Length: 242
Length: 103
Image (cartoon, rainbow over all chains, first blue to last red; front, top):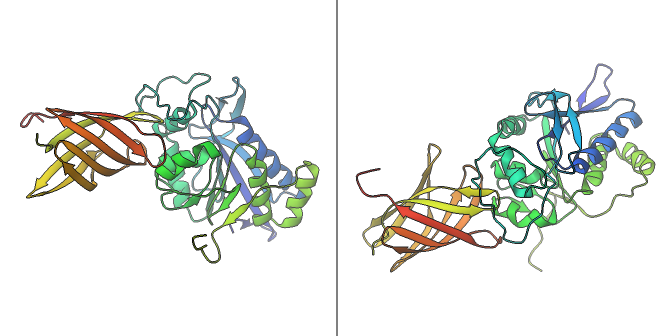
């Protein structure tokens, strides 16, 4: 439980969604709208803002130059939820590897290879801020789609249970993460969603977990989206080989 | 051809090339190794030498976290082969041995 108590004793959860160059807009907007509506449905128990590692700025997504504005700097000291989206760009061929250096902070351009966009976050201040956020026991980390890979490539979720877009599961596993094939994976203070649209289900699940099932259901109904897929949780007996 | 020495590797990964430095060491009949870089030394695992062929496992931490399995062949001061990150398709690796005393 990451919700703090406000002055009148009601629970409150502040959500920071992190923008970086080449982010996938739907990975951001789906949970943003779900969580924002959750705030309305709960009379202000949830607040949401878009942030970046660099502070307030216009951040260009990986989809057709669509832009969103970060209004603040990612604050790893602020309790609540931090959500990392994936990137959008070119998926590439199986086994494709780019002919550039991993650490080159080359200028970003449209239609770049998705793993390169995700990897480029490693050359920014983002991994350091995300590490500080993960070290904060008052923060739950969430990720949608390739956002798990941003955390994984930075070495922040080694040995943890997480999911990502189905095309990224092998990469996630190669970073030392236990990759789980489920739509939402709840590993306690790390909650991750699979491909793009799973951000809706991740947002609804987080609303249910932190604020309550009735608020989550009210948003689900408003958005005309019935949650789908499996929510995996790190509880109960581990399955034997089948 | 001995495989011992300090090797500058170039590895293709999904996020771009990375260039770890690997040292292969012989202790009697056994081989061990360490990866140098970013102010840390990470021991190599399962180093197996068979003639001029070498295989090992390496946990890369910088610039990105990645578990790699190597299978390379040494020829002179050059090394070529493949590295594989988990179930991802294998990709090319090349290496150059540092000449003793100049590193």
